[in-house]
Amino acid sequence: MEQIADGQLLTCLSGPSDFLRALPRDPESIFVCWEITPEKIGNLKKQIGHEAYSASRWLLKVLDVTDIVFNGNNAWQSVDSDIDVNEKRKYLRVPGPGRTYIVQCGILTPGGLFLPALVSNACAVPRNGVSDRLDGEWVRINSAELLRLSTEALKNGGVKGNQLNGAGIAVGGGSGSGGIL
Image (cartoon, rainbow, N blue to C red; front, side, top):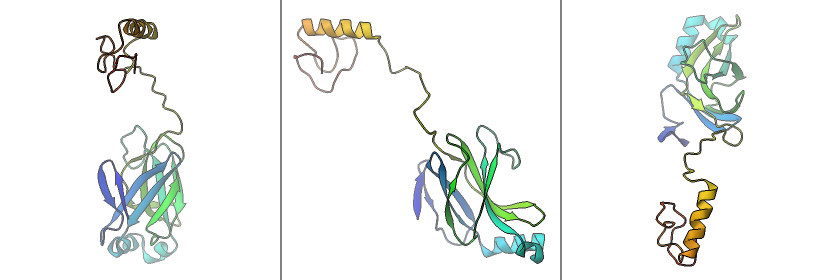
């Protein structure tokens, strides 16, 4: 399966290597895919012991890292999702829209210790609604001035090219003399 994010082709099935990728799906969820090698799993077993490993749970931990430099412990909030490590992909709900998330794949020991085996890329989900940007840089003229120029153009025979009376206001893609396009 291949996805495109930030201009890069991300391959979820990449062969014998460890990876965890997160891609935004919509304001409320992300798509996660991973591959964890038997060697990585074996190292985790050695680290905590076979008995503790067999009583542990595999998790995907979604961490809210919006506007911070993530150091491994300073996420705003986190949400855990139990997984079968062999699943390889899953859609996950995120705590809220318009935020940036990192996902960790690891094991939670019976004693409550989480050991991350893989860490994803940062994944920004879109906000849920209309943009709150109110900058009006694209507005270069007020409505009274536009009305004055358009009325003047109609009196003088219309628009030449795609400029309104030489004022530098684009009003259409064609040319004509019957008014504003």
